[in-house]
Image (cartoon, rainbow, N blue to C red; front, side):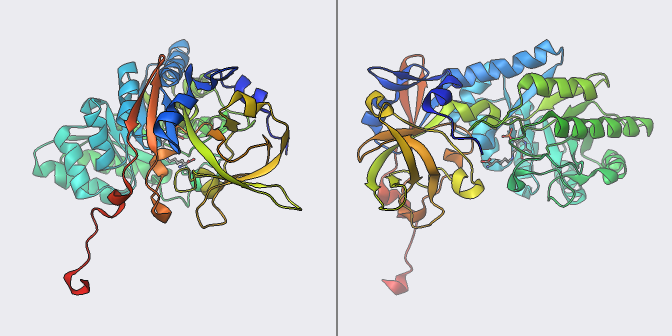
Length: 437
Ligand code: LLP
């Protein structure tokens, strides 16, 4: 393994994060110290301008490739209303995977027609909601779901536009837990069964099959898996049309990876190239469902050092007030996130290896092992980088730790976008049966 990137390398690759000699670490030109002073830690901070810039870069890559692509932001990556609002204003629709996400997207002002409803298990209530508000497309993942959706649509006299999600049996080469397009994975319909099911969908009342969808996984760093998957879809579109079916759209899913450490990442331009080469000339409308790429770099998690537990024969444990209940990714996937002090003075201290952990009572509760970091002391504050995607949304209140506050920085201003709930809120909805009184 290469040595960890230095502070300069981390900041060099992230123009939206900078170290100011007086104000310290800034996100989108707002001093993060100001947010931490006002709201305390742990606190998530999202940069609205970084979100906008990333959306524009993505949309620009498709324009350059002369591809008309509708972007459905994968709400699961960060479902905060303010995030949805910023992306909606840039032109994004939404990809949702639950009734809750659908309601959130609508609450943020995203029009139902630009919403795609994905997911391997949708309840009748969720499907009824989607039919009722007339979402643009429902991505169906099984024969069972298809039959259920047909019946539910007929019951309310509507015709639902559906795409069949294909399991193309392609390994995205990503982390095992977030690869979704291999034969044994629970997602999508085996590509060999698509012709039969597509024809059946066309015969069922209440359904209008409009195309195919594919999503092979997340944090994908190479173009080849995308190309292979899209080529397989193009082949299926050809076969369906030969059989007389109508296919107007292909939803290419999400999955575009970002650079957390120093791993290679794929540019939107490379993704656009893969789409152009495989699906560009077959006369379908294209869609994508990106989550991580849009929002991961736009967010940081601020935390304070509670104490430094020194050891005679090993690196110290830097114990933060943030933990796995806030940011689960390192514990769950062993993922690497940059850690940067907020204070300019701390950033200049000599560097030594340290383990960065949280206070939760699990050995797996940590953010970094043997990380080269400036010497930190109790009270110092740090930013954990690239936590805008799959950060706050995966938080829990494990160990009775209230959810962290959230703030949005935007062109010199900042605002609280989620207050830290009082600890009593943790048991507000609990009841103790009378007989225990
Ligand atoms: N579309 C579908 C159907 C998906 O399942 C997902 C992500 C996306 C789009 C968006 O993928 P993205 O562009 O964000 O890669 N918690 C994990 C990631 C799980 C991704 C789940 N599905 C993590 O923290 O790495």
